Image (cartoon, rainbow, N blue to C red; front, side, top):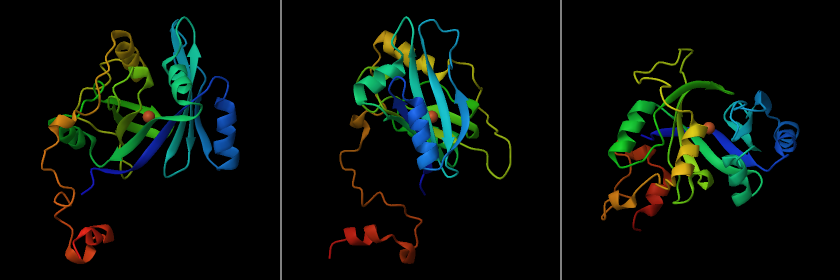
Length: 220
Ligand SMILES: [Fe+2]
């Protein structure tokens, strides 16, 4: 069974002065709906901040972030400068059970950036956890995954994990950036040397339900 079941949202880092233009594109052209607009998420931070707008497409969301530079260049400005305007900073994947997924991931050597957070983003309540960057670069410049869990069936968000005792995610990236921490999401030395994608297919699938790509991969 898949441990992540859909894309929850995609976060794009946009260039300075571009958030309104990209919001217009996603809303007027693509038909999204603006559900959250924060024009300064860190008004008391004299170093840097960002704008954050959330656009809902019902089955997934788009998040636009634009850096606000003060004493320092915002991590979001640095990302957009390095990768281009409207570049994918992170993709968030919905999980069936976030705690179960995280236990499984950590036991396989996945490196997460801090503890789970519980909050309400532009798309509703959620539990969320961020992975470290995919590539070994400055933390501000690395693309990374986010894993979330949304309340199901009208229930509230419940969790057994102590919440929001740590720093918010922007600050975690700043700390990694300042300390030169370039550690990555996954150490591939943990990958079994004899790993075979065909042998790792789910075993609970009934023969008649086997997806075509599995059948096509069998020797003729
Ligand atoms: Fe996100």
